[in-house]
Amino acid sequence: MIWLVILGMTAVTYLPRALPFLAGDGLKLPAWLRRWFRYFPYAALGALIFPSILSADPHKPWIGAGAGLFAALLSLATGNLTVIVAATIGFTLLLQRML
Amino acid sequence: MSPGENSTGVDPGGTVPAGTNPCGTGPLAGTGPLAGTGPQQGFSAGLPIALGYLPIAVTFGILARQAGLSSLEAAGMSVFVFAGASQFIALKLLASGISILQIVLTTFIINFRHFLLSASLSQRLRSRRRHALLLAFGITDETFVVASMREPLNEPVLMGLILTAYLAWVGGTLAGSLLAGLIPLTLVKGMSTALYALFIALLVPAVRGKPLAGLTALLSALAGWALSRLFPGLSSGWIIVIATLAASTTGIFSPDQEKTA
Image (cartoon, rainbow over all chains, first blue to last red; front, side, top):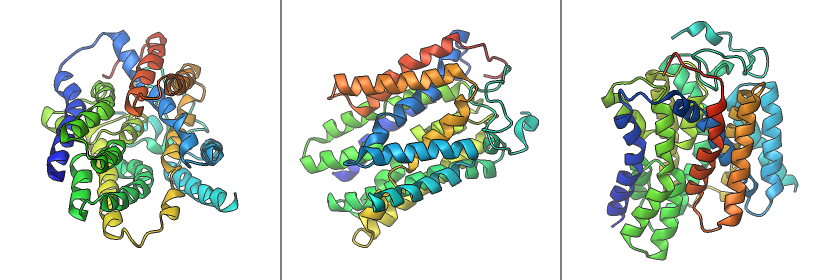
């Protein structure tokens, strides 16, 4: 039963991931469409961050907000993503401990 | 491949003007430590994702055991599906006793957004079909955004990046499911902001000096928020799809960045 669920989930998850690579092979998209595609990452980041960051802690929205602000400030100082992520984890634990 | 682009490894907020990549480079180029072309660079690029995935994967492992899955089944789901949100939702649905078909359909709806991500990446990556189909398995929100920031992006880097994230996801699931009783959930919960930190750390340097990119992210965030308010029943997957598609139309008005592709 569970394995059947896993099999089905695997199929429907993999297909959308693979299709563009199958179709995109040798496919030359018009320039405006490619410019559109190239802005997906910015837009995706925006939608991934907000508003769900406010529910990082389901009961305290300002924990997510505070951690986000901390990460933003830190990323002005360093470009090392691992450092930023690790420090933000620490900061979040601290916030939760304090408040 | 021009490795000279950013080999100094300076911090992206510093000397590299993110807004000045007029030719060829991806929209998110010029982010110092993200540059490089080998699998090792992929590994270090994947490290922050791994860090973000671990606590979530451990949580998934714990919840999977609570939902009645064996460790093998929990790990199996992470091994084959490799898509966080849908796996958590599947646990909820399994517990609610709805049909397999409904679970699979829900998974499809949640994960269809990967189509967009793959469509975007496939335009930048020249890869043999066989390799591309392997890489496609590893496309998640996180691997996509990190990979998108890289210039140049090639197969070994993407492979290393995906493998790092994947191992953390599977390993974390296994650890969580095996040690379900031993790991305090409070500690794991404290790590819930990790992926947001990653997203923000990717976004900030990428939009500096690039107002259109910043505007795009802002519009998308607002659209996502509005959609979640207006249509509370809409799944987060679709919200991301619609917000991303709509907001990124700003890119059509961006200066042309041909040459590669």
